[in-house]
Length: 269
Image 1 (cartoon, helix red, strand yellow):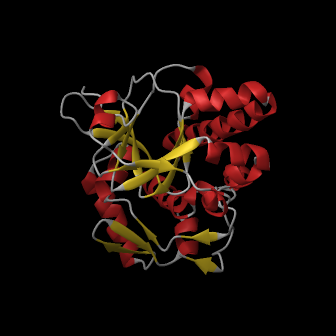
Image 2 (cartoon, one colour; image 1 turned 180 degrees about the vertical axis):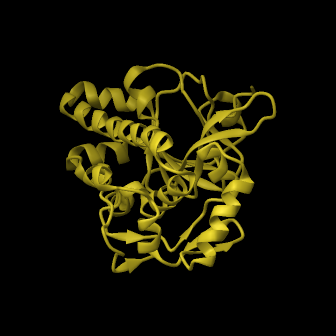
Image 3 (spheres, one colour; image 1 turned 45 degrees about the vertical axis):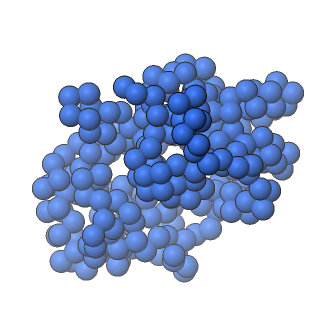
């Protein structure tokens, strides 16, 4: 596969725009739980040692197998994370990351090649802390290794929950839970808000859950008839948050670490 990573020489020659990350971005980054929980010195270090990469829809930030170890955060737009099916070129979607989600920490920790592709779904801006800059800081401030480990552990918990969901929940419950997590930014927002509209096309949801698009459409239409959702082109509107919550299965265990609201939040975006 052609290397379309913005860190490659070929992409640098294409003149893709980058710029220093301004410290004025800190308040927005601090709306994400993990970043907000890091000490102020580490927060400032991540910002001042990073650059903003502006990538076009369809461009790869990195490819599966790349020898890259940068830590990344979506600042604007959205990226699809997954692996490419070599037979038809489709992306087996694992996560759909939006502002201000962090990713890339696994390769940053173990130094091994990327396990997934990261491709821009729309024109996007990504804050990139190179592995060299990150390791230089961690060598001098080893206490912050724990912060990086906490970020990775949060992803591990999501993976374990997804595996349990696949084994114990119906497809309808898995779908409702996936919409719930997307609407609440995977429970990683410092504010009890939900997005009224979730940008998750039906074929993306089908790839995430490993079922057909027809199955997803049937389940979404049923929830639309029940007044829980409203379907729009490329987007899903959450009409009844509590109704979606009730259809997502037992969240008691996940509630402790996903920071999900038990009732409809007072504010919505």
